[in-house]
Image (tube, rainbow, N blue to C red; front, side, top):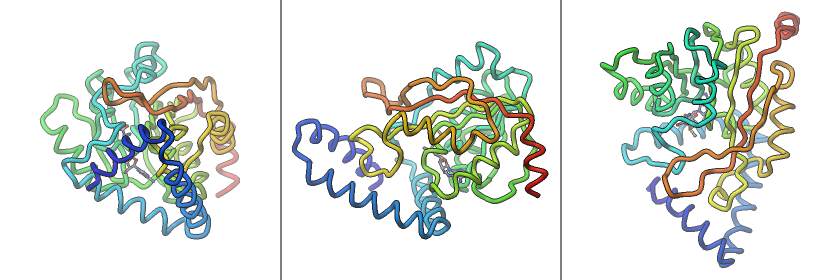
Length: 263
Ligand SMILES: C[S@@+](CC[C@H](N)C(=O)[O-])C[C@H]1O[C@@H](n2cnc3c(N)ncnc32)[C@H](O)[C@@H]1O
């Protein structure tokens, strides 16, 4: 069922390119607008609903979305090779899904903690990583829960989690990310623009310019964005990747004063 949904999205790309789906486009625009309003009015309910959907997806062994891949994003490879993510520092994988990124990082010798709010995803991660040398640790954690307490790390990566968070809860998400990053620590965020007909069913920011402004607005209090590069979230060989931006951020030190003032 879920696979069918992903494949239908693919077919829709083809049909949209041939100009035959304008009715569908209009329907999806309307559906997304309604989703947007519902998120505005009932953000916590929508958050629970998203979580329930992820639980169902991760419980399905056949779940193979377009973005799911064992290959690390090239930005992550750069971060390791350049030392931007030092090998002797812990790294947290935000919204780790089935843990592919976490396992790749652990394979590079880093100490890794993968976090996800889907208990099914965490179960899969632990099963898939059992018995490996330097296996990552995985924990259930909801990044939208207020005042999340976890041991901060120097390096954090988010591929594909932030861009699906309910808009109204994103400030809490950003504050939690800042809380679990040490001062001057590094956060690599890879977020999609949804600027592609394959992703019509998903509400979200649709232009790169808007995404850049949005990320600055949400994370700017806590992080300095050092670089923001156009990229793709690429999974299936031979298929176009999902348009995205990679944000290279450094945690501000002044933020600790701001956080203390808020408490
Ligand atoms: C698109 S998947 C990306 C998975 C993984 N990062 C990858 O690249 O393969 C997004 C993941 O974020 C998780 N997620 C979404 N909202 C979350 C939240 N508030 N707290 C923790 N995890 C969350 C979902 O359960 C899902 O596993």
